[in-house]
Amino acid sequence: MHTLYARGTMKAEITAAVGFLSRFLRIKGHVNDRQLQTFSQSLQDILNEQYKHHWFPDRPCKGSGYRCIRINHKMDPLVGQAGQRIGLTIQQLYLLLPSELTLWVDPYEVSYRIGEDGSICVLYESTPVVTVPPPVSVTVAPSGAGPSGPMLDSHISCKEELMVMGRTSPSKAYNMMTVSS
Image 1: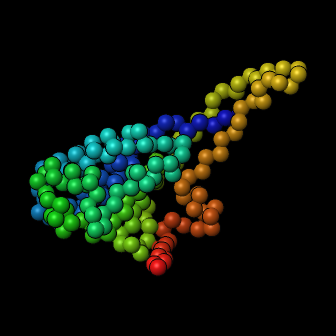
Image 2: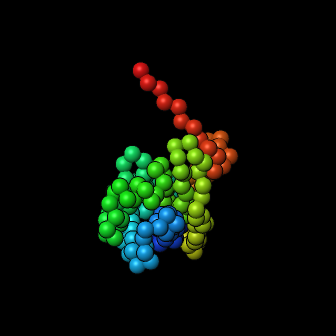
C-alpha cells in the first residue's frame, strides 16, 4: 500500500512565524496598530512568495536552511524588507527584535532559538495528513518480468530524524564547538 502526504499549504506555519515576530514589534512599542498590521501582511506575502518553490510537505527537512529566518550580526533580508514597508530602518528593527534569533519555518513545525546557546522551542506543530489511495490491481507477467507492485514510502520528519540520531527532544540546548587554527 502506498501512502501519500496531502500537499499541504504553508499558511499555518507562515502565520505562526509572522505572529511570533510581530509580537516583538508590538511589545517593544513604537509601532502603531496599522503599521503592525501592514508589517504582518507584508511579511506573510514575502514569505509566501519566497517559500512557494521550496515547500516540501513530503520531505519537511528539504529546504529547511532556505526557509530559516536569521537575525544576528546581519538582519534577515525578508524581515528587513517588511520593516522598510512600514518605515522602520534596519537599526530600528535591531532594537525591536532579539539580537540573536533563528526561526525555522518547516512543513508541520515552526521553531525558534534566541541566542546562539539558547534552547530550541516549538511555536507551531501539526501532523501531516496522510491519505491512502484505493488498492491498485497489479498484474505480474508469468515470466516474473512484470511490475513488482507499489513501494512503501518511509517519510521521516526532521524531529524524528534528530531522535533517530540519539537526541531525545528538539527543545534541548545544543552547544556548538568551533575549532580555530
